[in-house]
Length: 625
Image (cartoon, rainbow, N blue to C red):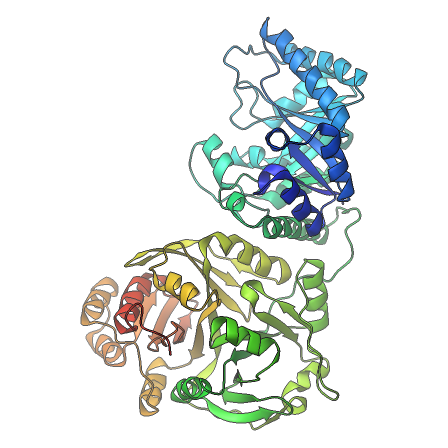
């Protein structure tokens, strides 16, 4: 599988883009003409630079407004094309993209356009190059790949082929199955892009909101299955116009792009029966069985404050690591670790972020297979030597700088609590039974990257993105369900939102809250009150409104208000939420009870919860410690 990406997809100079693309593992680039013109390098120099990075120029683009022109426009178009062919010879590439015209003087007619391309093919042959015709979804005469293919078919020239772009097909809701009838050898190039489902002008949508396959809502997999069925074996290339990507770090955008192509084609081959050439063999994605542990990094000075919070939430110190200053806190099958090691990764995390969630341990069916897949999907391994006699737990660096560890029940990794710890059985505590979800906070422009990371490495589904109203701005939120791991991603744009302040105050720490599950929210709330747990105070106005909205019985609402419990429901079931007061650093706990098939996260309650948290938080500017 030969992978490529258009230089227009990344920010920076041409040299910066080439370095990022090569480092991400791509085989080639589409060189966007503007990137070449904006550089101060001669064409031969650019060609050498590309090859020195181990890349090839898979496509030169775009050539606009060619077909269907009357004279003198037609002659000028052929003169322009010849100059571009000479430039391509100097660059060292043999394929040029011709996108369907939007020229106001262009004249319709399939045969007229086919003759134009037949003549262009003759000109291309004299320069040893090829041309590919792409239907822009906003094209004036051709805006459908089926029409573009008919032009190419009638042109009947070996130097003229079709270029397919998933966005242009899917944005017009054209059935990609129509691609299956096109001979694979007549498809010269395939470009891929996803996008969120937005009802807007096609040109504006395309120029600002494209994203990597798997990050949006378009059926890019269905498109690629149709392409694969033709026997096409050429490059798969990303052409991504996205304002955030073009302002982001080129190396991270390029890495996401390569990861998206690997994940896409892995999904195609696993759906069968189509073959995916040259894709290495690696394990399929696995769902998470459960969160086995969460580890906090802190210091000996700050540990008492964190441990007091854990104790008030019903956790009991139940063990100690055999060789490191890591204590185990347990309750009802939930394991939390407090690491005060003055060296190693945990200490680095503490120095960077303050007290923070540094590691999350995930129980899967096969830990080593999960690690192998993560590595194939370009995740960075986290290596820390395990002392003799202790477990070497496979681990990767997660998004946001944290670590994900993989454990299973079928290998020696099942013995973590007897080998690496001196541990007592978990007490019942206050009724907490496990971890319901983890809330991670990041800058909004990183959200797509985090979503792709989770959904490509693990087996799960993402929910639609929603807006959460903070009194000081909007926060975008997206939930990902990975089986026994639910993650809510909260992207902050405004720095004064609760999420924005957390990012700023913790220098980019990702986990802002941990939500625990319980079977009886009111029994748990009563037990927590006896332990000194400080709940987030929810105002009376909320309870008057929630009773009216849902028609709840007055006695239930009174119990909820007395315990500061919030409520939501949908057609599948009910949901109860109880929050701790936020720590000075913005971190907080949540306790939830799900009834029936409720699968949400209480999103309608978020504005009221955030307002309450802001009332309870320290004044802006007050030192953390």
